[in-house]
Length: 390
Image (cartoon, rainbow, N blue to C red; front, side):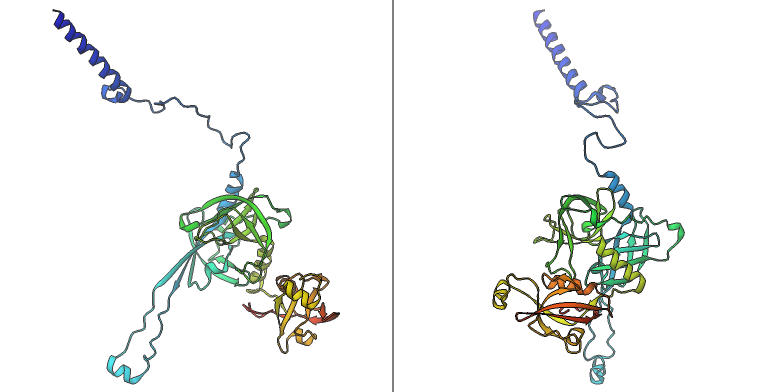
């Protein structure tokens, strides 16, 4: 009897232990449905809200305002196969017959762009669409539309596209342009684009510096530097402020690996707007030109010329028959001022001359040996894509 009692007690104990384990880990085996809202582990959750949590910085409003205006730009370019050098030789054709010319393969590319007008105008980088035979843009809502190149400016790396055909029912979401006067170092900015083709992406950072130049990226450089992540595919996308206004066009990164290292560059909206308006009006960008080659003044050169500091632009060459030649500028002169504005270096000289309107007469101040010389030069029109000289 005692033995039967022990067996019964052990059986009940084991059964209760199994029942406890099953009811805890696999209650469905007992036919007990699990409530969809039940928590296996006790956690603390916040109630759902329509906005960001109190005291938490959020830029969702800025992002939602600008996101519909940023598009993906897809380009395709036919790679022309080289023509055989003997294809027209009658002896070659006698032995080998007619050799068909191959069309080559298609090269595709991607980037980003920003809708700046309800008329369908899109700002992007020139290198995104350079040489493209076909351009398509994908809108934020999923629509894919053909676009044409209105014009490009390789010296600032900007281009303007237009969606065609432009229809009233498209209702294109144009972005609001910001003001560079309101941007300063330390301000929060968001970069929007299509990095590596993964889809529309928003990254956050601050304005790290303004007026970056001498980078060797473009002929005319006045970049906004930011640590907001910019990667391949972001080119041509939007850099916006904390209110969702466009303040720059993402253009380049400093990287040894191909990915973001926290140093990105964007073209200021003030420059982009000026280039865009000229391209829309005339299809090109007109800049001033005088026809000189310049050299940077190093500390050694400054000492040899008897200058107190290395400021100005050394004239290394003058193109014959150019406005500079007609104005009496000579090799060895040091350009110190244009239209009353000081010339700090060759880059500043380039930008000051480019701002002048062709046909206008502008005063120049030069240092020739130890004498200051003033002359007036009638500004010419800068030849297109001429990067090696001014």
